[in-house]
Amino acid sequence: MFLILALTISASVFAKGQDKIFVFESNLPAEIEDLYNQEKIKSIYSIRTDLNPFYLRGDFDGDKIQDYALGIVERKTEKKGMLIYHAGTKTHYIIGAGKPLSNGKGRDNYNWMDAWKVYVDKEVEMGVGETKKITLKGEAILTIKLESSSGIVYWTGKEYRWYQQGD
Image (cartoon, rainbow, N blue to C red; front, side, top):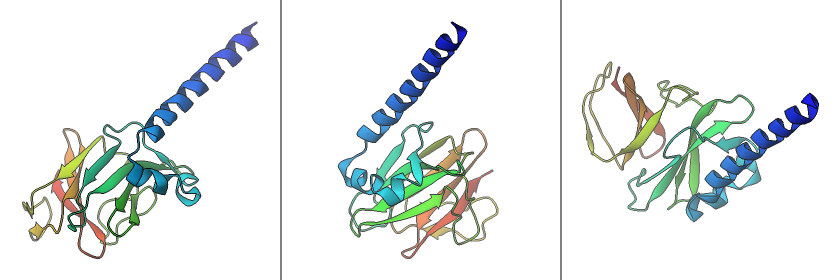
């Protein structure tokens, strides 16, 4: 009897997890849904379900076309990050989720990030530990550890970089 009850509960929990994933996947905007559903993406990354909202929309590369950022988790390592899709050029970039930024700042795992939003100001105030101000080409992504720290992930015209904000 105990075994039947345990199997029933396990199946129910698994089904609820699958339902949750289905809800997230079915709510992707069409512009990023096709990219996410490609085998080379979906087999490596899952959608990050602990982040609300689970995707952002903004003009991240400054071309006046709306782009998307999707919270993701690398399946093999469970490292968290984001997939940024430039709709105008149909290119994508993985930030975190096992891939660090080229300027050596920001980590390859954004498991600390519990909030994010589109940063719309062009001028960015001097960040903690930074040596110069930056001007953004487009909108950026403000990554936040609530009541702790924040940083901006922004497009330089060639790559994404990290700019520390608060600590």
